[in-house]
Image (cartoon, helix red, strand yellow):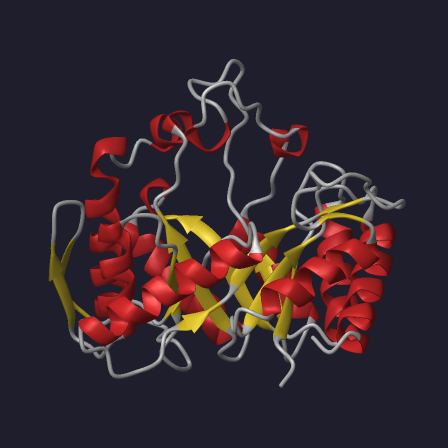
Length: 309
């Protein structure tokens, strides 16, 4: 059975958001992509307090100098499409007030006819935490837990009430309600995060950095789910941060999803062999403009389907 394929929407500085998001979303849906995705970056600090992903000395990509707001981007895509699911991979929970984010996601789900998938994580940038001024980095796990609680309350039946560290909701009617329960997906980069995923989320959002690594991580999640008595299956959507090049990348040290269309598809075939049922291909980082992104995305999709993915 073919895996589901999703595409990252154009948010970076080389794109005209008002024009390009709708164009790419429509084209992707027409090509056959089953989901459309956004990510979140809010500032480009110079100098940064820490390297990319918290790795000392690892520079932030130049494309991060301007990244469009994820929910506004999804709203533009929702208005331009009718079938594709609309996902976040991921929203950084502690950059948002829980109640407001829960309401925004519910409103977007209603506006799109029930197509939202909420991928939520804790992030890694100390500078972004300071800019958002919602909570300190040290409380990131607690903020994520509270956000999950608030979403469950706000999306559930009225009257809604909740009391937490950041949020107090007096018994109230809160609307609109989502069209259906919004699926919540979480990363799982530590034992504690994996337990949270298994106990509280609908699905898992790993990064595809190698087929063997992904297979090992997926088995670990499934084993923990069985150990903790989870009855429903864990959904999965793996993010592939692609770096497209017109010509093939030579050498044995090529990183996954870096290279030509044929090489990206080769990596997708290998990763699909892990049993993970859905992949998000984010191709926007190295395409020059929306026209090239549309063309490359279509070529990757057609080649992947021809290869049996």
